[in-house]
Image (cartoon, rainbow, N blue to C red; front, top):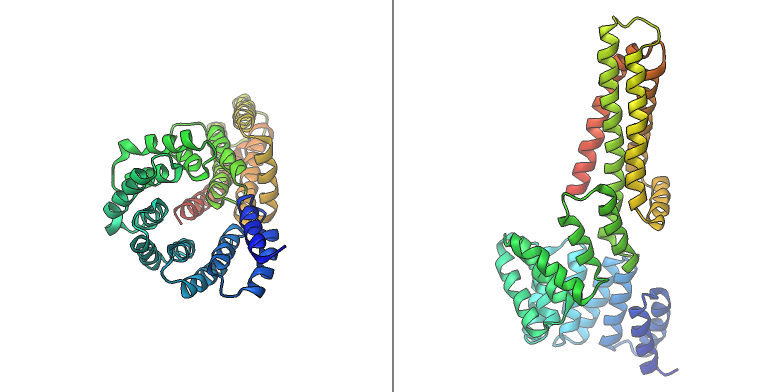
Length: 343
């Protein structure tokens, strides 16, 4: 296979997300044609697909050095810089791509996506997204950019419709699926998790819906912890009313029964809405994610303490003693998850 055909084959493999095979082919192409800027651009896409932002930037910069008047290298450099959270540099690279190809909708989309993350450039980002949609009205990426920049500029009444238009044009648009799910604030937890799972099915390598799905798992566990905390408080009150005397208590037994029913009902409702593949993924994540492990442990300890408080003869005293340390631990875990989500 000659180098031209190998490069075309590598581009096709990137489209299929077969990045390792594409990287191998590109190694042969670049060994024979190290000054082929297009091959470096395709290699940058490979590194992006593999989650290697720094290497993506290196490949994009090599393409820019070889062909500074071609917009593609600048645009890819902007994507890589955004992945590395170097937003000002990402905006400059995207602006250069727009300068080189002012009639190319992709350059305007990239500028809008990175400029939207810089508050002082939000209006410029919105105008760039509008221009992209004018140039390519059937591009799902252009309408997604309009949704993102509408949000950044306070045009909140427009956001959902732009995302929905992106999904009408491409039902598997990962970022639109993720952001539409984010907008469903009143939706049940299981339904939101299903939305993120749908985005991951469209692109299993997508980082944002994966992170959101993991955050939903943590939120689910904290909800169970909250149910257990209410049961502990009720058992503590019942125990205090009985002067913490040991012995079985009808009131505490009722609390224990209600706890089991509430946990079973809530967990069943949420888990039924989450696809089986997403549940398997989350089980595997618990093994590797320390934050999820801590949250799961807290949930199990709280539920265990609440059950003991409800059914054990000395349960009232258990509830009183457990409330303070478990409450403080629950607050610290909840704050930690909130900070993680904000970051």
